[in-house]
Length: 163
Image 1 (tube, rainbow, N blue to C red):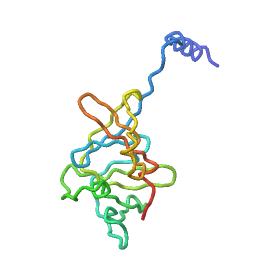
Image 2: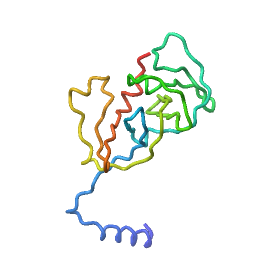
Image 3: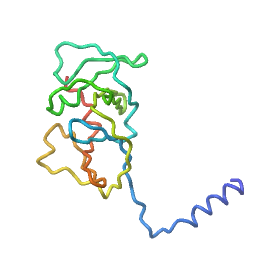
């Protein structure tokens, strides 16, 4: 190890107090569906794009809008409003496709509006009450951020194909 690297590492160690707990934070991407703010971990967000053309697919649930081609990859497109039981609305300048992936699964979700990237300390994320978590176990927790609550979605269950 070079002397310069040793020096940098020693300075980092000096600055750390081993008795001070490290606060874990969750970095999320927030978005609006209706009047509610939801979020997913930023590491699962592959891309956010303006809506592009998609192709309808027969014999799928109403919340599956169809499929779209993004740089040679065809993936399903899910309308989050319909998935959450809200009526569909006309797309506007805020509408986006949120491309989420985990492992080999990648799906596009039609969202009303992107709100941005947020870091929430894990001690400010409350668990979901048992009675709320019946909808395919989609909810991971409720994050408290200043004057608003953000519902954090469980990506692995959001990406499970039920069609």
